[in-house]
Image 1: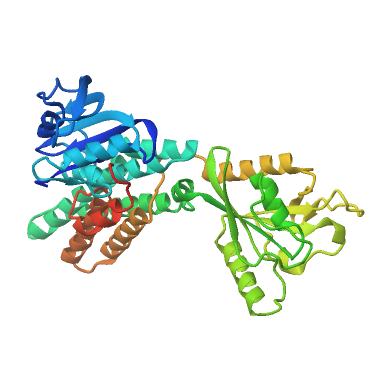
Image 2: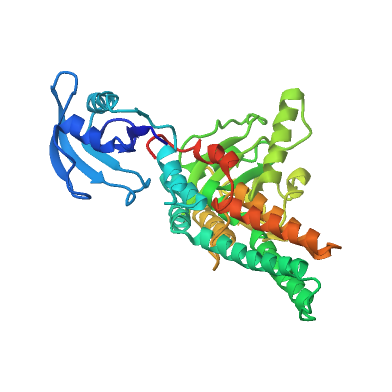
Length: 443
């Protein structure tokens, strides 16, 4: 980390203010180079004029901030230049910074990676930086902020601490096997091991709640051709997201719309009508529709109210506890509407007039909130965490049935290492590139 890195830390494009960040040993030199003055008092905004080091012409006037390490975000010396957010100003500032010793543009996520490598953040907090930047809903922001503040790290570190103590006891029974140890030593060890394993198992049995909050709750609109699925999507999206036609089978691919309900990110997918396909293209559309329904967190199963009392058998297959049943086209239906279909209450709606949509949105929002509502423990947010916890559970399972104390101790050690890899308390070099590559430059 001998290089000094710099980048635009604020959003790309024209703005009122742009923030350019510099981190490394030459951060102080960057201030002197651009302003012709020494570094200002730490963490005190200083109004300065910035000049091109090549010809001395003015670039802009703005704020300079100085954060000497290790009391900075990255743990290194940091300089920040707050300038006007025009593209010409930003380009001139970045070009000027190329003159500092061992200076270069930062790679995506490199500032946060340096914060981790200098012990300022654990890996879960580093991941939360990216989540905070990407947060579009209240739930995403709250979850990311809790993770950034160390809620996940505290939980995982507590389990790791308990397992480390357990490992110490296991190794004691090996090192002092000839000594008169208490008779209940092995019994206590197995009890504590089972207790920790059950805690972790219950934690990951969460229906992927944290991951759904982070990436979005998926809702698939399912039904026969021409029941009004695309019109329903357009009504929910409040725009023409899907093509609507009287011709059955117009929708051939899955069309997704992103929206917010109850403070949660929701992805609603319009799918092809499910029926016996006529041709290879429609067959592929039906296959994708079925796959979307299988992968969805919830389904809106749509029937045509004008076709009553007939109900499409293909659509009925998808009615379960994760389904909301809709009867569409009630504005032109003549038959009496059933109160339920397949044991699920019916929501009578008209995608054309909007009838029943307020009640539908209320019901859908309530279902989503019930599935994603917060619990006492911070939610698991990434597949990487889940895989490590599952590896830890597997290792503890082997330790429980190990025939030799040496084997049990080794599996407990593997469990400790698995939890440590989540927060970065053990060797994680192989996962760092994966974690930080999705960051934006300047973070």
